[in-house]
Amino acid sequence: MKRENFLVWILDIEGNRELRIANRNKVIMLRVENISKTYEDGTQALKGVTFSVAPGEFVAVLGKSGSGKSTLLRCINRLVEPTEGSIFLGDDEITGASPSTLRLLRREIGLVFQQYNLVNRLTVWTNVMTGGLGVLPSWMGLAGYFPRTSIDRAKVHLERVGLAGKANSRADKLSGGQQQRVGIARALVQEPRLILADEPVSSLDPVSAKTIMDLLREINQKNGVSIICNLHLPDLAREYAQRLLVLRSGKIVFDGVPKQMDSSRLEALYESPLQ
Ligand SMILES: Nc1ncnc2c1ncn2[C@@H]1O[C@H](COP(=O)(O)OP(=O)(O)OP(=O)(O)O)[C@@H](O)[C@H]1O
Ligand SMILES: [Mg+2]
Image (tube, rainbow, N blue to C red):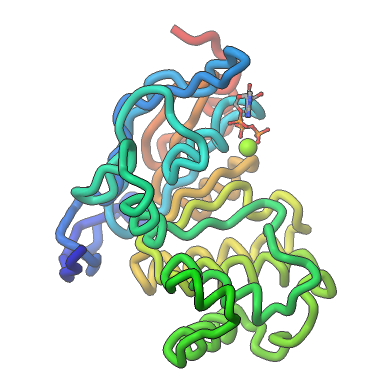
């Protein structure tokens, strides 16, 4: 997959246009087309979801519990197999990709989880290094051997999240906010084009939550990494995202900029019966 720099106009948080450099040769970096997901027990979690994400966009996904937010993020990297529809990352189709192609595509997508998903008994350093495992041949991980460039990269990202001093601590000795910063460093080691974050601050106190959201914003703005972030709190979504998607019962009921969305409109969208 070749990379090219590309200038794109995007909407900033106020809805103003600004010029950004995006990597790769596509104005649309992710295309989700008519995705549906019916789980084996018959639950219809997604019903014909369609949207696109531009390089460098920060998109927040809102919706009540059970509206399909996690299912949507998981379908994007096929942790959950969509029942119908297509997903493209640039020109490459994720849906239907062979295991080897899917592995390549997943390298470009970093994941950040609500519960951090660190290996508790391992050090911060080892947890961060495992982010590179999708990029390196698997024997390197098994042998505990990592090339110099991967080590340097992990150092840079650990420093960036402010945890260079904790490299040798056990992951479970860190606070929740620190663990989530390790989770972000692990995602960054992959040097992804897109980060999918599923409720990254729901388990954190407001101060730690702000630190994490600020970090995601910085990664988005400085590195042009697109972010799709599921959030429970509309205020947080409005503050950080350039664009909001609202899901209700597996369908998108709003796709627009935050200033078009005040609390009463959002509440109405959450509650109103579907057409
Ligand atoms: N593995 C599964 N098997 C069956 N049903 C599932 C499965 N995972 C999720 N669901 C159902 O699919 C629907 C959407 O769930 P999902 O977890 O995507 O919602 P969500 O918006 O992320 O909710 P929350 O805000 O609580 O995290 C819900 O009805 C849920 O019960
Ligand atoms: Mg969820």
